[in-house]
Image (cartoon, rainbow, N blue to C red; front, side, top):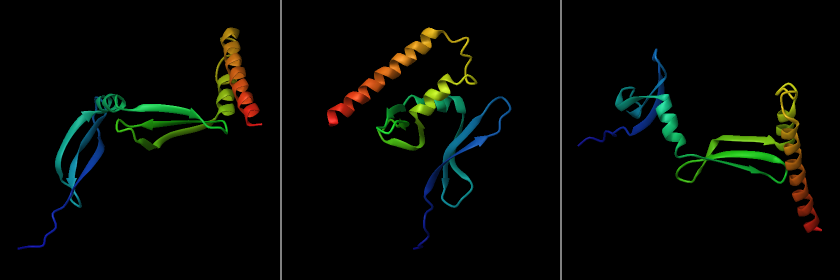
Length: 133
């Protein structure tokens, strides 16, 4: 009888060079061993489409004015790394920045719609503040 420890299979994903497109090799390797136990090569686009089908992007605004976007997996758990945080004033500033878009080409009606939306948001915040006093 030997006490040899059986290596545990570990999942892996690696990019494979391919002249016609990008492929990913997905599979299992034994822990501490470089050879593959099992693997398959798939186009990146196929994996992205299948994975995205099970994901949900949830965007919220914090009371401090930060817009937070997080991705939830099909299990309902938040995926910690893909997360975006930006302040609402920075986002609005970037939206109307003359270098970001050509304001001459943007109809005034679009900017007026944005202004009305922001004013309505300000009214909601003022109402919430008034309810606190």
